[in-house]
Amino acid sequence: MIYFEWPWLLAALPLPLLIRWLVPAKMLVEQAALKVPFLDDFSDAETRAVSQSQQWPLLLAVLAWLLLVIACTRPQWLGEPIEQAVSGRDLMLAVDLSGSMEEQDFVINKRAVDRLTAAKGVAGDFINRRVGDRVGLILFGTQAYLQTPLTFDRKTVMTLLNEAVIGLAGDNTAIGDAIGLAVKRLKNEQANSRVLVLMTDGANTAGEVSPLKAAELAAVNHLKIYTIGIGADEMIVRNFFGNRKINPSVDLDEKTLIKIAESTGGQYYRARNTDELNNIYMRLDELEPVKKDKQYFRPPSELYFWPLSLALGLAAVIALSKVRL
Image 1: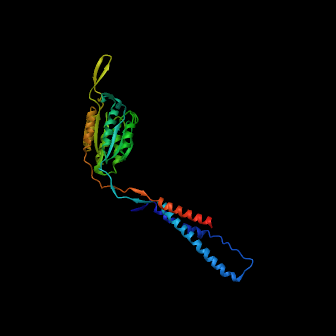
Image 2: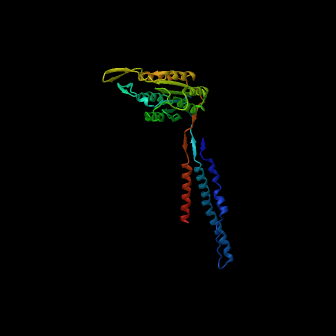
Image 3: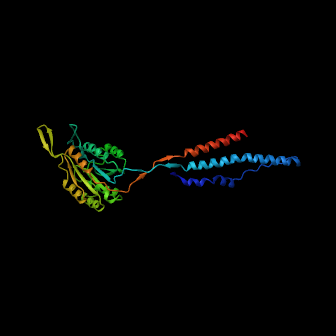
């Protein structure tokens, strides 16, 4: 089917008539010094011939103007409807960027890396697998920021996640504010498709809203929260006196994370290493999609250049005729 992007421009069609009405043509009347009665017949015949010869440029000009206005309305040919791959899940990812995320207690390719680097690798693969989902990204530390709103552009979400650095949002941890921001961004979405995956390695130490209060607000708005506690249980530290075992996740508030998940119908997961973190995201991949109305897209093909080319061609013909005359 043919579709006009700017059909209101058709209102410009009577513009030449309006200009002619407002600015009348200048009448050139030449008075002959001597009138010869028997030459009137020749004058009438010549006038009729000239009048007929001037009609076709006028018709061409009218046609050229019509084609030019049609080109300005931006005609398009809409192709056959194409169904878009939409699973129906709206998923927000909240990632902790507090100072404790720089603890190097994860291993990738036999090399010790910090928690954020491990999270980026696994979460990036998770985002890449969410074909048909709308994915958003929240980064939080002392404050919570919406880095990416819900979008089908998974590549952009992955890029912005990879660009995140520790301390970007402050060194503390505002879990409650991150949940509150997710509620705000998801409250207008379909109720049974609101999902938040929150990953942190500590306890709430900043923010205006407590995590449990934010979880109550999330439950009221039907936001399901999956919490992930990240960090190893034990780590070997070498010092002057030898090797010593420590618990790098001593500050992880698992009780609060469990309550947040349970109060919203979600689940709490513990990631002590890269394999466990990857398995958690594999489980999250099994979330049942929410059915939505099918969405269709009709690919447009521009047609404006056809009437524009014809209009320019007619204008050229009129100009050449004037030169010849």
